[in-house]
Length: 262
Ligand code: PEP
Ligand code: MN
Image (cartoon, rainbow, N blue to C red; front, top):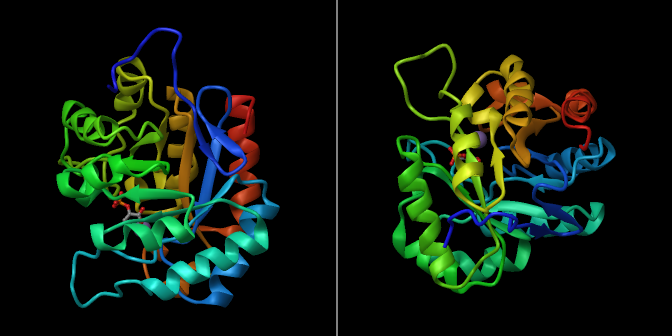
């Protein structure tokens, strides 16, 4: 179960790194995989900045069916190439149970997006897998509902589970979602699972990404997952919130000061 046991905080391996209380893990990369050139350029910058893992969506859950839906299987192949080139472990979203095997072949960690947090069929299938899973909190899910969603994965015997706070819907519209920093502390108190934060989707705007990442570190998060792009103006998805890759060293040094770890 996800309930906290004193002295038994879990650590989840992601490639060479271990997400958990002993360190601070930084996962960075584009919202979506757009092309081989785009991904390899960003992946090299992510590695050079000292980040620990690469993110990138091949299957994109878009609000509009007319928006770019991701490169799909081709995107998975590009992620596997980027992993081979940089040595970085890869995190990517799984949208459909039918793609689990393919995604698990190309990625080191399978992300369940906010919109799928209560896709119980998908969660149960991921519970049968022996691969790390990143479960993002739903846009309007309570902490309790998030923990129950986590139970679906754990109950199947997959204990390699990391939770992610990514902002919730509130009346406030100065940013895209409201980062629920309190939830980080509550989740850390109530579960033994590692908890990371996605400051990018909460921010919605580049200038807010580093401040929210620092807030996450201060609240006790075990890491962050950040959207970054070599040319945000041309990004096919979420360019407005992308941290230019040239600012990744700044993200790393400020997190390192804040945590004494990154
Ligand atoms: C993402 O990480 O690209 C994403 C779609 O995030 P979320 O599911 O939190 O909206
Ligand atoms: Mn995105």
